[in-house]
Image 1 (tube, rainbow, N blue to C red):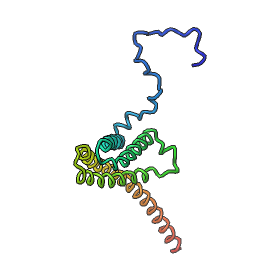
Image 2: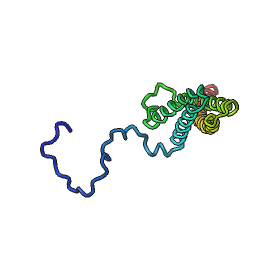
Image 3: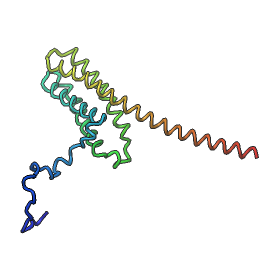
Image 4: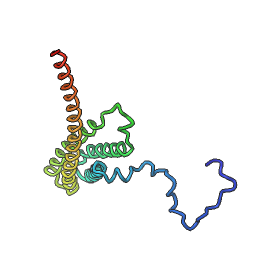
Length: 182
Protein backbone atom coordinates (compact mmCIF):
# COMPACT_ATOMS: atom_id res chain seq x y z
CA UNK A 1 0.00 0.00 0.00
CA UNK A 2 2.50 2.62 1.11
CA UNK A 3 5.01 3.52 -0.26
CA UNK A 4 3.58 3.06 -3.75
CA UNK A 5 5.24 0.55 -6.04
CA UNK A 6 7.61 2.27 -8.48
CA UNK A 7 6.63 -0.15 -11.25
CA UNK A 8 2.98 -1.14 -10.86
CA UNK A 9 1.98 -4.22 -12.77
CA UNK A 10 -0.32 -3.48 -15.69
CA UNK A 11 -3.90 -4.66 -15.49
CA UNK A 12 -4.16 -7.85 -17.59
CA UNK A 13 -7.80 -7.17 -18.56
CA UNK A 14 -8.48 -3.42 -18.69
CA UNK A 15 -11.79 -3.93 -20.51
CA UNK A 16 -13.33 -5.87 -17.58
CA UNK A 17 -12.57 -3.17 -15.03
CA UNK A 18 -15.36 -2.81 -12.46
CA UNK A 19 -17.00 0.38 -11.28
CA UNK A 20 -14.71 2.81 -9.48
CA UNK A 21 -14.53 2.15 -5.77
CA UNK A 22 -16.16 -1.28 -6.02
CA UNK A 23 -13.18 -3.06 -4.46
CA UNK A 24 -12.54 -0.42 -1.81
CA UNK A 25 -14.48 -1.15 1.38
CA UNK A 26 -14.35 2.41 2.82
CA UNK A 27 -17.76 3.48 4.07
CA UNK A 28 -19.41 0.38 2.63
CA UNK A 29 -17.99 -1.55 5.56
CA UNK A 30 -20.41 0.36 7.80
CA UNK A 31 -23.46 -0.64 5.78
CA UNK A 32 -25.46 -3.60 7.05
CA UNK A 33 -25.27 -6.82 5.07
CA UNK A 34 -27.94 -7.37 2.46
CA UNK A 35 -28.94 -10.68 4.07
CA UNK A 36 -29.69 -8.91 7.37
CA UNK A 37 -31.65 -6.14 5.67
CA UNK A 38 -33.79 -8.75 3.91
CA UNK A 39 -34.53 -10.59 7.16
CA UNK A 40 -37.67 -9.85 9.18
CA UNK A 41 -35.72 -8.14 11.98
CA UNK A 42 -33.81 -6.01 9.48
CA UNK A 43 -36.98 -4.92 7.71
CA UNK A 44 -38.65 -4.07 11.01
CA UNK A 45 -35.67 -1.98 12.15
CA UNK A 46 -35.57 -0.21 8.78
CA UNK A 47 -39.29 0.54 9.01
CA UNK A 48 -38.91 1.76 12.60
CA UNK A 49 -36.04 4.10 11.75
CA UNK A 50 -37.72 5.33 8.55
CA UNK A 51 -41.05 6.03 10.23
CA UNK A 52 -39.34 7.70 13.19
CA UNK A 53 -37.43 9.99 10.85
CA UNK A 54 -40.58 10.89 8.89
CA UNK A 55 -42.44 11.60 12.13
CA UNK A 56 -39.54 13.73 13.35
CA UNK A 57 -39.60 15.81 10.15
CA UNK A 58 -43.39 16.22 10.40
CA UNK A 59 -43.15 17.43 13.99
CA UNK A 60 -40.37 19.86 13.07
CA UNK A 61 -42.63 21.37 10.40
CA UNK A 62 -45.72 21.50 12.62
CA UNK A 63 -46.88 23.58 15.53
CA UNK A 64 -46.63 20.46 17.72
CA UNK A 65 -42.87 20.85 18.01
CA UNK A 66 -43.00 19.81 21.66
CA UNK A 67 -43.25 16.19 20.47
CA UNK A 68 -40.18 16.14 18.22
CA UNK A 69 -37.82 14.76 20.87
CA UNK A 70 -39.47 11.33 21.09
CA UNK A 71 -39.22 10.54 17.35
CA UNK A 72 -35.64 11.79 17.26
CA UNK A 73 -34.62 9.53 20.15
CA UNK A 74 -36.49 6.56 18.69
CA UNK A 75 -34.85 7.18 15.31
CA UNK A 76 -31.39 7.19 16.88
CA UNK A 77 -32.13 4.10 18.98
CA UNK A 78 -33.54 2.23 15.98
CA UNK A 79 -30.41 3.10 13.98
CA UNK A 80 -28.22 1.94 16.85
CA UNK A 81 -30.01 -1.40 17.09
CA UNK A 82 -30.00 -1.74 13.30
CA UNK A 83 -26.22 -1.42 13.17
CA UNK A 84 -25.71 -3.37 16.40
CA UNK A 85 -27.67 -6.30 14.99
CA UNK A 86 -26.08 -6.00 11.56
CA UNK A 87 -22.55 -5.88 12.98
CA UNK A 88 -23.45 -8.65 15.45
CA UNK A 89 -22.46 -6.62 18.48
CA UNK A 90 -24.78 -8.78 20.58
CA UNK A 91 -22.34 -11.64 20.05
CA UNK A 92 -19.31 -9.47 20.81
CA UNK A 93 -20.71 -7.77 23.94
CA UNK A 94 -22.11 -10.61 25.99
CA UNK A 95 -22.55 -8.60 29.20
CA UNK A 96 -25.59 -6.73 27.88
CA UNK A 97 -29.01 -8.32 27.70
CA UNK A 98 -29.77 -7.37 24.07
CA UNK A 99 -33.21 -8.95 23.74
CA UNK A 100 -34.45 -7.24 26.89
CA UNK A 101 -33.07 -3.86 25.80
CA UNK A 102 -34.68 -4.24 22.38
CA UNK A 103 -37.95 -5.38 23.96
CA UNK A 104 -38.05 -2.38 26.33
CA UNK A 105 -37.18 -0.03 23.46
CA UNK A 106 -40.05 -1.37 21.39
CA UNK A 107 -42.60 -1.34 24.22
CA UNK A 108 -41.79 2.22 25.28
CA UNK A 109 -41.71 3.44 21.68
CA UNK A 110 -45.11 1.90 20.94
CA UNK A 111 -46.65 3.46 24.05
CA UNK A 112 -45.08 6.87 23.49
CA UNK A 113 -45.99 6.97 19.79
CA UNK A 114 -49.56 5.96 20.59
CA UNK A 115 -49.93 8.69 23.22
CA UNK A 116 -48.37 11.52 21.21
CA UNK A 117 -50.21 10.48 18.05
CA UNK A 118 -53.57 10.71 19.78
CA UNK A 119 -52.60 14.11 21.16
CA UNK A 120 -51.27 15.37 17.83
CA UNK A 121 -54.38 14.33 15.91
CA UNK A 122 -56.85 15.56 18.53
CA UNK A 123 -55.26 18.81 19.69
CA UNK A 124 -53.41 20.31 16.70
CA UNK A 125 -55.11 21.41 13.50
CA UNK A 126 -52.20 21.84 11.07
CA UNK A 127 -51.56 19.23 8.41
CA UNK A 128 -48.02 18.38 9.51
CA UNK A 129 -49.18 17.49 13.03
CA UNK A 130 -52.00 15.36 11.63
CA UNK A 131 -49.54 13.61 9.28
CA UNK A 132 -47.16 13.00 12.17
CA UNK A 133 -50.05 11.54 14.17
CA UNK A 134 -51.05 9.19 11.35
CA UNK A 135 -47.45 8.08 10.81
CA UNK A 136 -47.22 7.70 14.59
CA UNK A 137 -50.08 5.20 14.53
CA UNK A 138 -48.27 3.23 11.82
CA UNK A 139 -45.08 3.36 13.90
CA UNK A 140 -47.05 2.11 16.92
CA UNK A 141 -48.13 -0.92 14.89
CA UNK A 142 -44.59 -1.61 13.64
CA UNK A 143 -43.09 -1.32 17.13
CA UNK A 144 -45.88 -3.52 18.54
CA UNK A 145 -45.15 -6.22 15.94
CA UNK A 146 -41.46 -6.02 16.82
CA UNK A 147 -41.97 -6.37 20.57
CA UNK A 148 -44.45 -9.21 20.00
CA UNK A 149 -41.86 -11.11 17.95
CA UNK A 150 -39.13 -10.41 20.50
CA UNK A 151 -41.43 -11.61 23.30
CA UNK A 152 -42.18 -14.84 21.42
CA UNK A 153 -38.46 -15.49 20.83
CA UNK A 154 -37.62 -14.91 24.49
CA UNK A 155 -40.57 -17.07 25.62
CA UNK A 156 -39.45 -19.94 23.37
CA UNK A 157 -35.91 -19.65 24.70
CA UNK A 158 -37.07 -19.67 28.32
CA UNK A 159 -39.44 -22.56 27.66
CA UNK A 160 -36.60 -24.62 26.18
CA UNK A 161 -34.37 -23.75 29.11
CA UNK A 162 -37.18 -24.62 31.55
CA UNK A 163 -37.85 -27.97 29.90
CA UNK A 164 -34.15 -28.83 30.09
CA UNK A 165 -34.20 -28.00 33.82
CA UNK A 166 -37.32 -30.16 34.30
CA UNK A 167 -35.76 -33.17 32.58
CA UNK A 168 -32.65 -32.80 34.71
CA UNK A 169 -34.78 -32.58 37.86
CA UNK A 170 -36.83 -35.62 36.80
CA UNK A 171 -33.66 -37.66 36.21
CA UNK A 172 -32.35 -36.69 39.64
CA UNK A 173 -35.65 -37.73 41.26
CA UNK A 174 -35.57 -41.10 39.50
CA UNK A 175 -31.99 -41.69 40.62
CA UNK A 176 -32.87 -40.75 44.19
CA UNK A 177 -35.90 -43.04 44.24
CA UNK A 178 -33.87 -45.94 42.83
CA UNK A 179 -31.22 -45.55 45.47
CA UNK A 180 -33.83 -45.44 48.27
CA UNK A 181 -35.38 -48.75 47.27
CA UNK A 182 -32.09 -50.65 47.61
